[in-house]
Image (cartoon, rainbow, N blue to C red):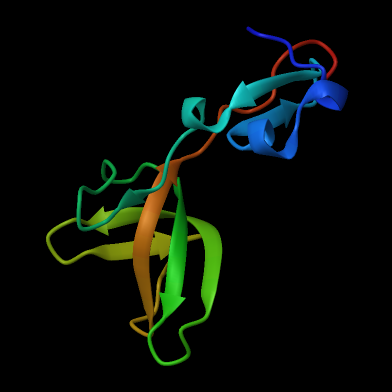
Length: 104
């Protein structure tokens, strides 16, 4: 992986970089999981993913983990409870792998 000395990186080259704290390296945002529109495709059934919820009446945006239980009806649940009809799931992405190693 390419190492960047952030003191030599200009604001123009900072775009698309993110610090990977455990190794002091930087990775491109394009190498990270990306948001997928539910109109494009849905995750596999009963697989927990990170979702974006938009309040139907308020327009408020929140993130939480959820899984789809019925792809035909776009029924989602979070923490074992069905997500209320007043919230629309707009996007999702896979959860990152849990931390690993002897020190975690």
